[in-house]
Length: 161
Image (tube, rainbow, N blue to C red; front, side, top):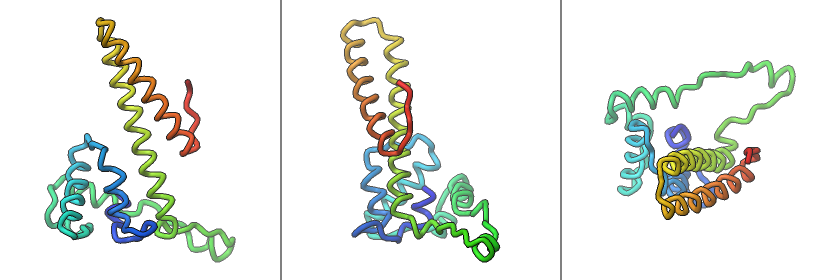
């Protein structure tokens, strides 16, 4: 959400960041009602050909959405200018690496979603006593673990077996 709010108009390859994110996340269902409200507003805005910004949410969003937008768009940390001036240490601005950030954030969100689906599937498996249902849950679990492994490899995360 933070990237959408701050950089929706930025370019990602041959498209806007908002278009990339909406395409990549179209199969994701947000469970947090505030993030769902913000995401749905971006989808509706894109459908009308508009790109929303923080001002839109501050004027039209719910109180919870306004608070979330304020939290997500306010920088919590700032590096000292002396780092670059004296020590020649450069921290790239998010806008400079937006392509990598957007890609990795989408993968991380999907990774967390796969983990949540795996937990839910295991919970259902533990409650089931039907042999056919257990087979179905084992198959789903195997597919989810395969997807988790693939995403972990892309992200450089080590996942225990």
